[in-house]
Length: 210
Image (tube, rainbow, N blue to C red):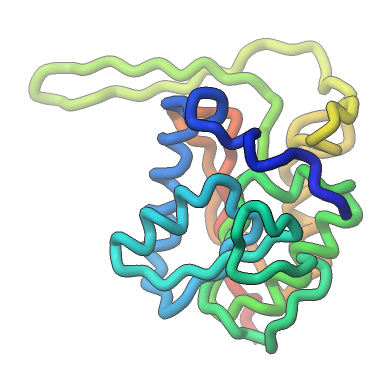
């Protein structure tokens, strides 16, 4: 696979809007709750996750095919130069959709091989939701997420970056989760959409019991 964008794509004023920062918070929250000894991030983008996680005392290494992003390992996600279970947690945030679906399954299988404790990913979900928040005195913040009405799932058209997205025709969430589990040793533990950024859906997978 060739890189789709150059490093300027991740400039602060075009990439790191407030909703993406909310998603980055969940990246850090999900991974840190697992209390990993070491972490491998696939597709580090601008490096915000690693920089922040490192500041919080977590040990993170990164892998990408693009040397301009200065990853710790320049290598393919399809054949990573690590032994089985080399990292407690392997994560990839908004990355797998940049591969054709069958290739994304191959990548997830390889991530599963390298992870000993969990694989944490986020994917774009094209089914629109309207997040609503209200601050209620003495009760705290009430959060609702209202699904936008739609007649049928849209057919995805490759836009130069995304080959597929959740909730597009043929990519129902349950089907994608089943395929990820089928090709790997992992089973889904939990999934949710970020309230402040419902386009991002998180998934935490752990090894299947023997």
